[in-house]
Length: 365
Ligand code: NAI
Ligand code: MG
Image (cartoon, rainbow, N blue to C red; front, top):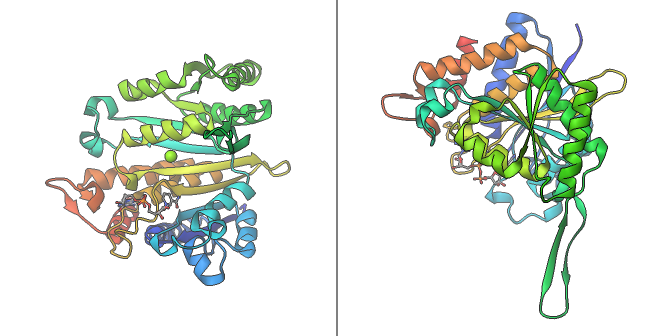
């Protein structure tokens, strides 16, 4: 059997609490199904800074690079607000993304039937929703040069950010979207603003050309990103996979996420390019939420975002599709049974803590 090396970075705040529930799942899978996961753990964020003055050490970075997948909890908290910018907790996350070259950020928006009634949209609009936003993560306006504030000398200043995309960047991100669509409902919607942006014109051209050359079996639609935002709220079930740039993806994925409920439920994956020899992608899986200092240490954090991130890891890094489906079904079943952590608690349901929620999911798995 191929090796399955996981590197766990629990981080700060509720990160370690949520990761603890995933650790239980890994141990149970190894024991019951002989999955052979090998795990190692490191420090990231504030806890790493406290230990050695860096947001992640070179030694842990080496381990992250050598692993088949990295599971990341959350970093940060008020304790580290005064630390210098270069070593602040978030620097650990940014270094991981950069050094692992994770250019594709996958953000699913799944509506569990038991939570449809608590969405801000009508239940019939979100019930059964299962869409995936593929956001380009390493290019675009967040990184393009020039990027500066210049003094115009007349009492005015000018803030400049530059949106830059090259053909290869658009090709590799849309390639990921087409590949994923083939494992889902075979439909990609590409979003840009070609009506007002040159990078949008190129984006549209490159996606169209790649589709024609390699993915003509997948249904492809193009939508202006602002209209896409409207459609996400009006009738999100029209989408399967949405592929878009860094900036639009940042906003659209947050909108899509909130269609389905609490921060405590939202997983994500970030993928790099396939290795030339092994074909394996570098990958990191993490909940969307932060370290939640307001509830850290109380045993009330919702572990579902972290557990669902592990399900994505099974699916995308190890091609363990059956197990991933089963784990997601176990989450849905526990919610159907009425178990709720405090963040998703509603009338008539049973409130449980982090560990009891993890145990209940494990019991159904
Ligand atoms: P946050 O996501 O940590 O918390 C926002 C609110 O949602 C809080 O009220 C929190 O209690 C609640 N919440 C979040 N996750 C939850 C869960 N699993 N179960 C139950 N309730 C949950 O965002 P916030 O408060 O803006 O940031 C707190 C710290 O986390 C900051 O230091 C921030 O920089 C850091 N952060 C780290 C991220 C990461 O590691 N990827 C992402 C976002 C923020
Ligand atoms: Mg955002």
